[in-house]
Amino acid sequence: MRERGLLQKIRGGVADACRIWAEEMRNVVRDEGMVIFFILVPLLYPLLYSWIYNNEVVRDVPVAVVDDSRSAMSREFVRRCDATPDVRVLCHASDMDEARALLSRQVVKGIYYLPADFATRPARMEQTAVGVYCDMSLMLTYKAVYQTAMLVSLDMNAGLQVRMAGNTTDRQDLLTASPLDIKHVPVFNPAGGYGSFLLPGVLMLILQQTLVLGIGLSAGTARERNRYQELIPFSRTYQGTYRIVLGKAMCYMMIYALIGAYLTMVVPRLFGFVVLADGAALLALMLPYVLGCIFFGMVVSCIVRYRENVMLLVVFASVPLLFLSGISWPGSNMPWFWESFSWLFPSTFGIRAFVRVNTMGATLGDVAFECRALWIQAAVYFIMACAVYRHQIILSRRHAHERLDHIRRKRELRRKLRLRAGK
Image: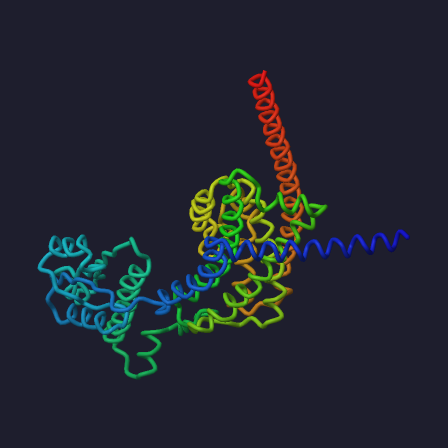
């Protein structure tokens, strides 16, 4: 009898969770805000972001040249810089004041200054210099301007060394110019591009943030109407907070199983970014990550009172979460407080694991720590979601009883007034 009763209870719980799943899906479809954040934003925003960074690197960055040397050597330096794909010599300024004016108006992004003794100092066996002034507001343009000047100067240095060495064979010239043969091989990012470096982390962050936005928007809508619409009907019909949490999570999981596959498997291939992960590794990683994001969103939704609050909160936190993930700054170099604080968010471990698996070709064993952390987060946030939902159910029932008592008192007062009026 006990086994039969337990079996019936399990069947009833599964049936209730499925009905809550269907009811929550209807709520998602009816709410335009949730449709936007659950479907439209994850579908369109990654395409826009990937399209913006599809060029990977900046080309033909405009620079101004101030050539006080006016020598064959200075003209050769300028010509070689202009021949590179990264820099384009836009104009020759008469002096530094004119060049700074062009830089302040953003006509150019950098300045190459060649002093008057640029060619005469090497002839006297003295070291010469090139002044490079860069616009540091955008690191990509700074890298192009500075790195171009460095590479051209190294190449010209090698030629000067060969001419001054007085060698008699080509082998001696080669050893003089390049005693150490350095080969630059970019690992995991062949193009050295910004998109391949940043996009994988952004895709995982979009998944978390849109989930939190959609769930928080639903909770904010209910509170704006001064009633817990997402909980009161469920709490009156179904017994058990776990059924409500699991039913709603099943709805979000069904949606984001497709969204997650689209973000991790379709978008990178559409724009030719590095993809080294196989389907099994992605499934083993995305399952705990999506579950952790869902339950994390449920917990966060409990502090949302108005619809606008969740948008301000998520938009404000997006950039800090990207930095805390360690994709742009090593987590080992962060202060211990911020490193510990970043562990509260599923995006931290999700971004780190996805970048290693998808871009670096790591196996599941290589990201075992991140996967375990995601499963722990999913379990902890599930328990917290059940606790806060139970608290909300109690508050909603108390609020409903208070309203009923208030209505009863008003009816009783009206009845007494009518009786007095009749007398």
